[in-house]
Amino acid sequence: MEFSDTTSKFNDPKCSESGMSLAEFSAPDFLVPGDLVAIIATARFVTQEDLNEAKSCLERWGFRLILGQSIGVKHHQLAGSDTARAQDLQWALDHPEVKAIWCARGGYGTIRILDRVNFEGFKQYPKWVIGYSDVTALHARIQKLGWASLHAQMPLALGEKTSETSRTIEQALKGINYIIESPIQVTQIYEDDGPQGSDQSINKLREQGAKSTNDQTVKTRPGEVIAPVIGGNLSLIYSLQGSEEAPDTRGKILFIEDLDEYLYHIDRMIYSLKRSGMFKGLAGLIVGGMCDRTDHEIPFGYDPYQIIWAAVAEESYPVVFDAPMGHLTDNRALPLGRLCTLKVTPTEAKIQVHGKTQ
Image (cartoon, rainbow, N blue to C red; front, side, top):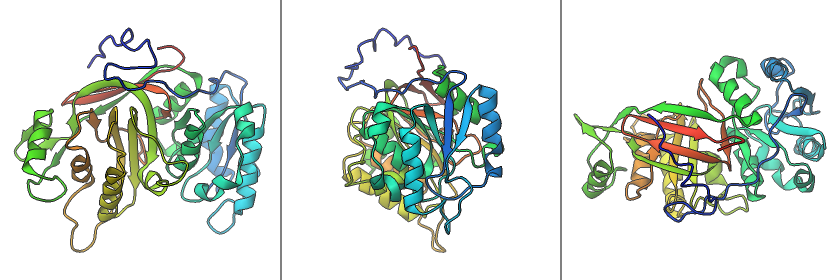
């Protein structure tokens, strides 16, 4: 699949063909050899040994490394007390030489320290914040300040991931254009009064490109759009509702992923976000890994694809499922707040990440 020549269409960053704002967030400087990267732990604890693959990658990419004091510290599940982790994050944000902060691990704990940190130093010395999952809360705060960040694999378990996982981190940090490809999969669709909604909704999905074969529906809504990407972990986005970090999704490509959630809880979160208007006015929707979901002895009856389709059935923007981002072996880096081109057909999807030049 080739991208159409959209460069001339989107030279004006203030508007798209649909009239949506295309103004991306400010981006920290892209990294060059010799730049300093800090690894800190904002959530669960990590050991020095957990960082070996990340250390090797940074050396191979030509970057220098400095470790925060939270590395190797254990306070129950966390990498030190809330006060200690907040102080480590503050140190990294304020450090004038640090060009990127790589959060060592997710789990839980980042949201506990957000209100203990000020971002005046970050505004003076902006830098890339890297991580995913629990780090979504920190990404959301950074985006509210008008800055881009990087949804990407953390040092923990980096050695267990694909080569593309680390390669795309390097490309994103250095401002190199790259493309994330996602083959379209097929899932069962149930034509009843469950999460798929009415027959009218099902028919509208099919009119928009969801092809049905033997009671199976291709998980896609075709289209092409260029817009900033925001989002991250579904549970964190849901948890941030009503806070100052709650994302403004209008005119943006929303990305969601999650891990180890009950199906009914996924349904609750999606319905809550729909009722809050988060799926209205999107430029597009990218669904990454929805991994290791859990069910009860009496099945809930609907999978995440059906649940999410129900929330966006009446919309018209492009949608893709199973994009290689999230709690997956292949976890590609996705800049948040930067312009990306999302092109979806009934058989494949491509996400073009724009680096230094577009």
